[in-house]
Amino acid sequence: MNTCSDCLAGPNPAKYVFSFWGFIDLVTILPLYVMWLWPEISLNYMFAWRAMRAIRVLRILKLLRFMPSLRVFWSAIISARHQLILFYSFIAIVMIIFGALIVSY
Image (cartoon, one colour):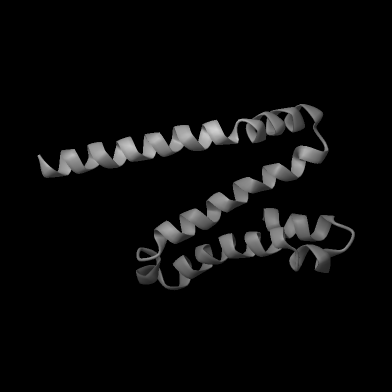
């Protein structure tokens, strides 16, 4: 429904359909129809489909040009990216270590 409205609301529907965001929308909607047509396939690829749906969250970045406060927030994240990468890497390593300890004991 959202994809149809995005396609029809714009001045040039073909431009949206063949754009990056149109492709992402198509890729995230197709699994729904595949699950309806072939339910036995849907369980095998559920993780990949969820990951593709998560990519749609990146559409929020399109709002950066319209909201100055969001631009300030984004610039703060960019300036702190090294610290954020270090923090999340540390968290991932700790989770892997503790996960391995839980499984082995």
